[in-house]
Length: 114
Image (cartoon, helix red, strand yellow):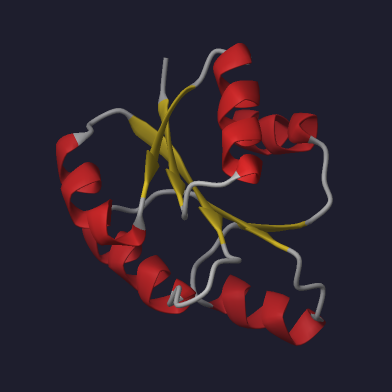
């Protein structure tokens, strides 16, 4: 079973994603942006990173750069920002996928599987 690193402030959305991933045979670990270094260096079985790009004071691009400097992992961003400029900026930063809310949890699991 691979680990999925969920980054963001604890929220109903991340709780729902966590529940759905667990029920799809993925183990997930919820961390705040401040814990990224520790978790990436100490969890060996991480296959994907999912970032909730919605909470105040979150420096998302810095977070993405930090992840990429430690390990090369697929990164999926969840956001409600539907702007093509935002999506382009995020994808240029090294993110693999951007999912806009609302979305179906099944869609997220399919992205992880492929």
